[in-house]
Image (cartoon, rainbow, N blue to C red):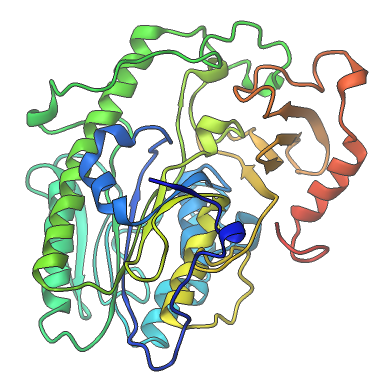
Length: 446
């Protein structure tokens, strides 16, 4: 692939929105807890996007499943859509008339579908609003409970066999029904549980080879004295065998997802569906022992960085897009492609348009397993500034600043090294972050 920076080359959308253009079909595939740098085990997916765009600097603005998925649906930061954690009840805060499924279903004449995981804490006995067809689950790899719905009728079904294969079959069934008359364009979210823990793969992949595991400097960091005290109860010395096993299980769980993507691609080709916008992404990253930590919900790169790809033949220039992209950009991209202007304020930007973004807000309001983790940060290509907060989220209890150019592994917190000479202008950063945390109230969202 060639490397592109779209604003400089004037690339991006080559066919402007036009009321006379037929609306494209839209397929959005979202994996669960897939960190950046894991695509080597998904060659079929990479081949699909060889004529698309890879966003090399893509971020989950809230690296926790439920808030991130709400951001994908709405194009908003978590503090605006108000789904702030995975806790039961949080999913009920989502205003469904701010979602892409609402706009495409109610305004765009789209047939809409969702197959797989919806929102953590969502009552899977309830239909997800504005979907004509759905098969939703809380997760799991075998004998998973799904609520199936088609055009207003629904039933409970337990998956037979491996759950990713079940999701694949239901996605193919949606395409079959949608293409039966081929009158309406369609929007389909395909959201397998993989590679979320316990990261189980089907037997055919139990012994599959994965790329060798080479611990990076962040995994081998032994001096954590400059890191927040909130992590002290979770941080552990790096255990190579444990993290290698975890990594291997996750990567093998992605292999059947790769098979699913290939099968969906084949179905689109068979049905002659050339005008289809396809997005592939993860809801958040995952840590393999960096800074002594495992899992997600931290501000560090392995937790927030995600794989993200887009393909729309004839409308985007293939290559690698180096813009600072995010999960909040998916909804405005879908709406742009469908020619729909939303009523609600959207924080993200269409990836089909030409723009530059110098920095992003990332934020976490507690995780189920780590409720005391409350932080917000300014993230750019060059630096990251982080503030941690007490329970009322107003008092700053700890700060971090990383020069990402000199220190990409975030080993040296320049606000924790007792050297004031290398400190940034904290007052300016803190003021800017405070405005971002309530954007667009005091300032436009980054």
